[in-house]
Every structure is written in C-alpha cells, then in structure tokens.
Length: 135
Image (cartoon, rainbow, N blue to C red; front, side, top):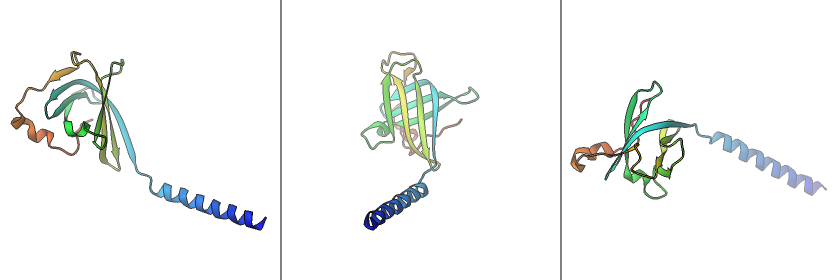
C-alpha cells in the first residue's frame, strides 16, 4: 500500500511539473483572417490585394518558395467555397510564422489575374521573409 501511494505521489509530482513547464513555454499566437479582392500570379510568387478593416485596398507579396514543400511559410488551399478567396496569417510572439491562402481552384475566376512584370523588375519585392501588411 505504501509503495502504491509513493508511486502515485511521484506520478502526480511529475505530471504537475510537466504542466508548469508547458505553461511557461506557451507562446503568444495571433491569427487573422482577411478577405482577398484579387490575386495576381507571377513566376516568382503572388501579389495579393486585400481589404483592410476600414475597407481600403492594400496589397502584399508572397514568394512562391513559401508554398513549396512542407517546411514552407505558407500553404495554398484550393477550393470553391462561398467564402473564398481569403487568407489567414499567423504570428507567434509578434513574428510572422505562417500564411494560408484559400483560393479558387479555377484560375478563370474573377479573383485571379496575371502580374505582368519582368523577373528583373520584381525580384526584390519577392525577396522577403515576411509579408508587409496594413490593417
């Protein structure tokens, strides 16, 4: 009986210390969803036009590298749901972490366009670590 009580006490202490450690390691995560007005595709990435909170139009650039592989900074979700197109963006402790673009799978949709510029003209705008957003 004493041995079982001792084992239970040790397990309880270990469980509490794991919970305390997990609480200390929590990150400040912020997620925002924003409607997309238009998305222009380019060989180097996407230019995304979106609505700010005051209903003004703003844009940001998203390099194609963000959406390649599983370790990228982004993901494209293709579909045709009524709420498309929009994006969600995630910050962790104030730093850009991840972006998801929810886009119409049919590129003939009105939300799609082509970003007509030579690579040399736009290379710098796609050479970024995080999107520059205004809300």
